[in-house]
Length: 268
Image 1 (cartoon, rainbow, N blue to C red):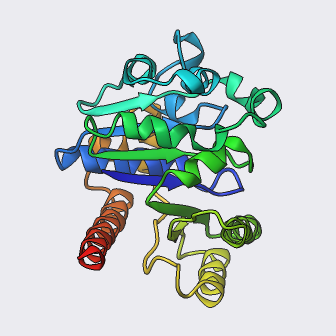
Image 2 (cartoon, rainbow, N blue to C red):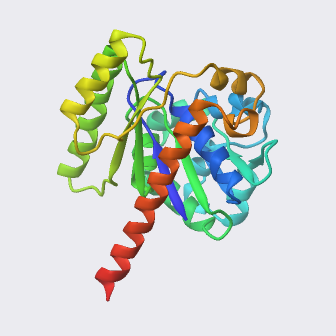
């Protein structure tokens, strides 16, 4: 099972769009996909037309009952979307209280890891959307994944947020925590603007080893898809933005397969 976390310590860089679009592409390839929303703003739910606050349960319940986790409890939180084989574990505003109320309890850093383990035979891929704030939710999302995707808008202020995110990952590694490999993905790229061109050049200079080789272009079809409450691949599968994400997905899957092969070879 593929487990990818989409994260950045700056909002508005395309995290939710990245999660929904990659999920839609995976579904088109016949995969069973679970999206987990760890952002108290519940953007994933709103994108897909799901009113998270009106649901009887949310991801918060799993953290609140972290010492009683079971497959049945995890499944009770998951809701279907309008797209077949695409499911959502929704967020709620209650998640904003986690750090204050439960953050210091033992085992809180690995709740999502346990949840995914309980659901491993039901999904082919899990994509996790993160809040832009470092806390127990982001720590959970980073601890349970096999690869980290860091979208960054190609503009100056977003580069500052990226710098904070990379420093966070470095500090976690220095503290002895497991940190999955990450890929920086330039988003909302507009080759007509000097700001986008300069930002992309700065990304290539500062992060040559972790920067994805291409870009996600600015595309109004993403906005149209969100208004229709559909992933862009299901709404406008031939648009240039979806094509770019499809190229990203191919690279992520290829890398994941290489990692599996490497682990199998190393184990022999």
